[in-house]
Amino acid sequence: MRDDLQAYVREHLSDPDGVLMIDETGFLKKGEHSVGVQRQYSGTAGRIENCQIGVFLAYAAGRGHTFLDRALYLPAEWAEDAARRRKAGVPKEIRFATKPALARQRIERALERGIPARWVSGDSVYGNDGKLRLWLEEQNLAHVLGVSGHHFVTIGGKQQKVSAVASQLLPDAWQRLSAGAGSKGPRWYEWAAVQTNSLHEDWTRWLLVRRRLENPQERAYYRVFAPVGTTLKDMVAVAGKRWAVEECFATAKGEVGLDQYEVRNGTGWHRHVTLALLAPAYLTVVRAQAVRKTPQKRTRPAKTG
Image (cartoon, rainbow, N blue to C red; front, side, top):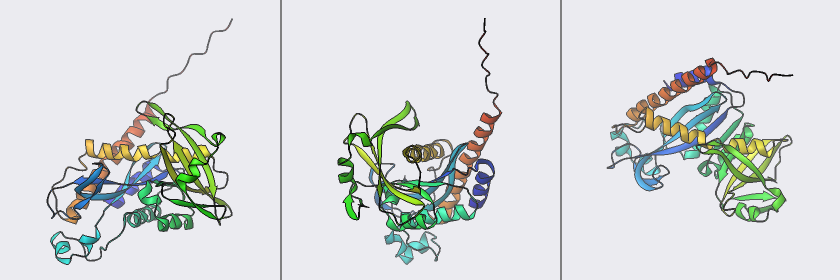
């Protein structure tokens, strides 16, 4: 079913400029028997809760955005408990893997299945992981990945904290650009990009910084790897795709019941979640086809004379 989902998205939404988006979401649970459940941080709740965490891969294309893949995060405590694994139906071949490692596996599988993509995006859970960034570079996969303010980059052969680099930027380094349309119109921020050390000939690394217009001290940071000649506007466009994966989660949970399940074992979780990803993919394709078939209004030429 997962392979069918990817084939369906490839057939109807393929885009050479597509963006693979990695993110996770929490599923609040009670008790301790549901596979992978433990007290851990949930972005859904905004705090540490008793929950399961799923790592998801979504796809943003010109005609729409939807999910491609999923994986249940199995904490080390679970991975090392044979009795608990057996009771929850965790296959023997499943071992502990970090969220960035799970993300890499999803990206690899999508590329092997022929999903065209130019960029990868994700938040600091993935951007702070050097192994994932290095692997993406080895694949020549351009990416814009969030990092924390305590993250370090190398500029001029010297390691510097990203928050310190941002505080030293001159006023003319910033540009006001929209990160895409939001519910209240364009999402305007100020952006700046600084080149960092790179051993690549045709590709360059950057530190991308975003700050709020009304509060310049509130910043976000991104590690960027992209071909030489990539513009600041290009980077901002990819960074702004995060709203798309959030919309994917909202649709899957609100319209097709992604988080409405009562299963305890891993097989049941993957079956339910996979079906809940296929449904919004179908809705996305139907919506794209409807938009394409809608006749465009023609403007009547102005009278002359």
